[in-house]
Length: 329
Image 1 (cartoon, rainbow, N blue to C red):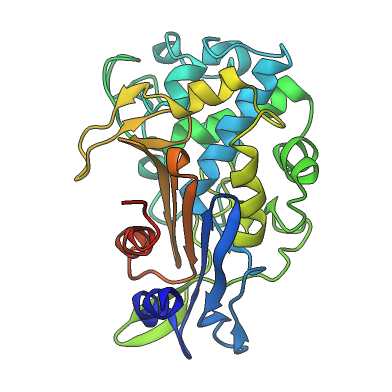
Image 2 (cartoon, helix red, strand yellow):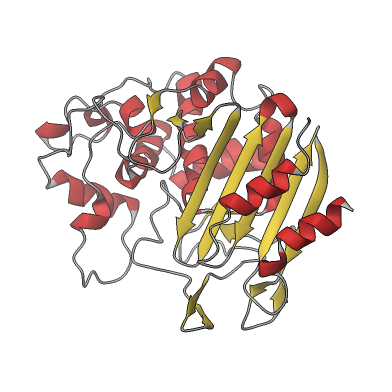
């Protein structure tokens, strides 16, 4: 009965259309783990539990975890000034700390707005730094307000590289993915390791699905460049309940309200790479051709993850409806 109800909620994703993979974890067990529709519409490849989707902003929790791991190593401090690590940034950024970047309280200018309309190729994290180095202005004084910032998380990936002496994809692989057995997850760089079981993004244009897998900003890693599957994210979710990766203190920082989210149609606070709404920890991810969401209720030991390779629908409402089927009264 439950599976039939879940399938009804996921009906839009099913059939010869760009699809989705859905995971429901309850008390450590995968009570739902399956794919719907197609991971590659052109090739007719079905979506499944091993399908790798570009996580978009769901990537931010991994960037935040990387900073926390380096804090545990004693390699950096959460309240380090950003210019300690990236000295090419202009004087206006002098008061910005890593904590401000983690919580979207830095006031940094959005790099997307600094790119030329006819930007050639794809910008990388280092290119984001180059753009911001020329902008001696902020939206507001650091720590005085909230404004969601992809710029901040692009810079955090560069801090990870500076503090660790490793490239960002290599750090993720060595410190997070390999230890947790997330063997199909990676920060994707063109010309590097291929994405296994790759889903390709699609958008509906004039009633027809078209492949829209990459944009000029798709190669920025720290804010959204990780690929993963629901199989691997089940391992990630399990690690967030204990100290195998992050210490109790680190998880308390990541999962506790640091700033109030403003300017959004929902009520939430922001931790380090996580939104917090009551007892729920969550994050969405949106990029060209992909829409994703992860919802966690640690007290109920309930997690719902919905990854999709299409621009519509936005998956939050569907994931919430799925979660309600498994909620304790």
